[in-house]
Length: 450
Image 1: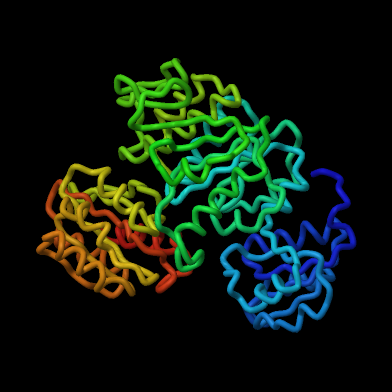
Image 2: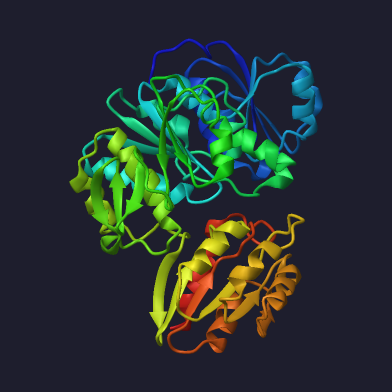
């Protein structure tokens, strides 16, 4: 960790605990900041708040009282999921108090460079691929961010020779001021989180912030097949490194003669790659580009691509029961992710879907659903998805109460050779705390069938 004084004796409000708030509070307290923590969860049920209070940190629980801002705060570090429409944050903006996320703290204290990965889909897979490639190439990577390990905690123990591979959400990127990754990756942009951002334009602006503080010494890895990504990268000062699944490029990562190339160098035949799904080629190309930018040996890249089968909850193979294959894609929390999951299979497919209703319809899913044999639906969006399924001509559509019931119903509808796929196209928060919880319930239900 850098020995900096930027946060010493600063009055900082941590808004929302969860993993990132809890970690930021401890890190900033250690650096000599004067911390107040505010969390919605009541104090009596809030183990994290109680632990921080024992460290001498002031805690306010059970709501977000605006009158807290009567005290002077130099910064607010907010949980990424708390929207800027929260009355306390509206008031903070009026008072011109900087509102940051903990990744900004991580950037200031880290002696190591960052690789930042964002996009609507594929962030976790790409982040994991990059980390594994760099790890096998002896590049001393650390992994952090939206993938589950809090960035400022990782930065605390980082050394200059490390490189921190960081998955970043649009929510996190809205709360940066100086954060500048040495390599920034923007995979794709799709209509996601519009309930948070309001419009697609605002969502694109949030994603584009990953490039905003880069200099000519940095690199910007962009998907030139996605016009919104190209637009978001306009004016970025980092050296542009393109990747494409459809164009043979002069530089960057691309496909030629059914093989992955970087610049004019062949890396690996696609037939040797074990990660399923055409959509994953996009993630692989981005990862290869990053790995080559930090001089990772080809043998390390090839080792990963010939062994990596995916991350948990992202097109994760679970098991085969009576010649039915089960796949867990609980991380598919929007339409594009589910479209890509469906397109990964040629076998007859039974789709399990549904979840939080964010106000959108599923007409964009209809064409892909024409490849689906049957649907088993649950959650707030079950009726909307049923409508989309009927538009696609699916004759077998069942509505059930939850994921566990969906597994049983799907198995009853299936035949030998079928794929049973959980790919909800929706967030999980109507019935579950996280998409991980939803995926674990699916996995357990599948194993119960045995």
